[in-house]
Length: 212
Image (tube, rainbow, N blue to C red; front, side, top):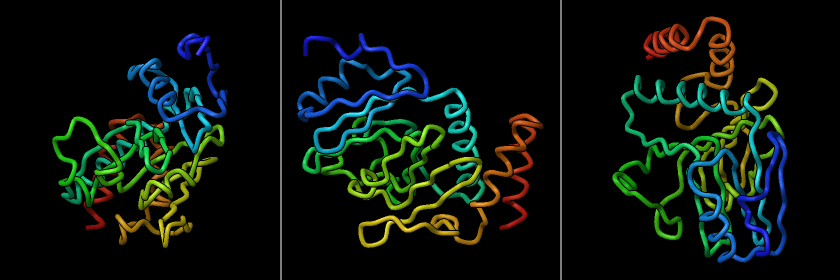
């Protein structure tokens, strides 16, 4: 490339699309961007998107991620949170960086691994996207086989469950069948903005214990 990708500035909430990018170029761009960066990438059969999240997207992903962790901890379910790890499958020519993700059923299969290869390793069981700028790529998650995708959009949580290779919107989460997370997660996210994180997390944990 004549211009190194790290020289390109993408303002918050904006994106850059690059066409006809080979897998080798995609890998080189990821290395050029580095691991410690504010941008997210998505790769779909030669089209690469580079996007910089808005501040509210970042705060939303942290709080919702903390709520999911607390939920799994209170239910005593082992999990591994990998944040915005880049997930790639060269055979499928797909790559994505969720806002957050969790290994739950497949936690033991990837436990202790420093690097994951989705041509050999299972995909995350739950991925989270904060859809502040309408930048989500359900089709990539479908192709990678992520069984559940949460999309938080305009104050509402949408739960997408993979069925026969395609996402179907659901009112319940297969990972938390007896809990109304679709309604409760947005409620506690809003509560956090009013009462503060610590007080909200304690209240949320108390609510979970009351349910079980």
